[in-house]
Amino acid sequence: MNHEYINEFNVIDQYVLGHLTANEAEEFEDHFVDCPACVEQLNVTKNLVQGLKGLAVQETLERERVSASSGWGRKLLVPNRLSAAIALSSIVLVGVLTFVGFRRFTQLEAELRQTRQAASISRQEHQSSLAATAETERQALATRQQLAQRVDELERKLKEDRRTQSSVPYSGTSDVNFPIFALVSAVRGQAPPPTEIALPASSSRFALSIPIEDTRDFSVYRVAILDQKGRTVWRRNGFRLDQYRSLSLSLNSNLLSPGTYDLTVEALTPPNSWNTVGNYPFRFNRRR
Amino acid sequence: MFKPLLRRMLPLTATRDDRASASRDSSVDYGRLVTRIIEGDAGAEEELVNHFEDAVLHIIRRIAKNSSLVEDFSQDTFLTVIRKIRNGDLQQPESLGSFIANTARFHTIEQLRRLRQRTVSENLDQAEDVPDTAPNRLDELQASEQHAEVRKLVRELRPRYRELLLRFYINEEAKAAICADLRLTSAQFDGVLHRARNRFRTLYLERKGTKKGQHS
Image (cartoon, rainbow over the protein chains, first blue to last red):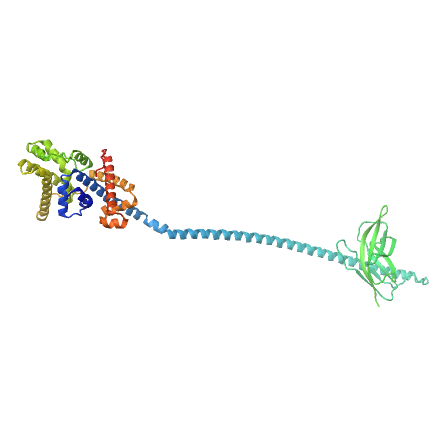
């Protein structure tokens, strides 16, 4: 056996691993007993193999020890990469859904709050409106009552005048049975319907009672009647308030044609200015 | 008389390898050595042991496969060889190596046979204590150092070559099969082993503070 053979067939490795037959081993031994180089190679190879086997055993034992100590924890917490990925995805999804749901809830809450506020405001406005309407109706009722009272007073006065004038010859200038109509002032900002004046066919004259809403005391008033086109069809100066804070006037029934008119009252403000203190729309017609 | 001499021998360690390697010389004059031994030269006996002890240990280990018995058998071998040389039983000094190898083999086989017979026939109470084959502290230390060197070597190798080493020496797979799997030629395979052994030798000797050139 020579070195060429030994190298070609890895005799040293085979000898160390025990893969040579008895004869081959003896033949090699007879060679290396006289070959320091092969003995040295044998020593190195044997130590290398021993070291590799020892290292393999040591690392196997360490792996088994580590695997045994962490096996349970790993199985409970992170079974495998797929489960970890699924768990992580689930957590992310729940987080996103929670965030979106919370945002939506917050929005709905804000909308509900706004709606409630709007409803509260509407209720308040409605109540204010109702209160205003009730106040207007109360005032209208009071005015009607005053007018009715005024009409009764005028009728009593007329009867007294009639009795007083019963001995005076008929002058043709007055009609005992002419009707009296009470007008209603148009309040600023509100336009009441025109007072209906349906004059009987037999009446040649009629009277108008004009309540003055303005509480200021003026010395003189003037009254004007304007038609639909704004033309003055009648005017008179020198009126004064009676005890009911009203003005009274009588008109010839032939003065007005059927239609809608506007009666304005102006008061004299010193030194020489006239200011409107009331407007009284009415609709004139003759009954047949 | 040779036992004290042999007991001075260190166990099979790197230092002994170094000492043996340092003194081992392929040009030893076997004839002169035998003559000196016959003349009673103690130095010649020590020189004989130093020169052949590694080879003898390898031979005995192949047969006995037991580290403790290997040491004992090695000592017995050299005692037998020296006795025979003194007695003039070695007719051809140039075949000293073969003589020592055969003595080692025959002695080991004989001792193992006797041990087997003794184990079967003797009363257990009278049986000799079975030597403790567990590694002692020195062996454990040597193994730990050996692992460190091997670990360093393995880390230096490429994964392919690491696999080659482990499959060949640990799994003891056939060279042809490994070459086929790793797509290596026979020469490449031998080259990897050669480089691994040389590198290991370097690390091995560095630990012992001795540098040797590569030996092919």
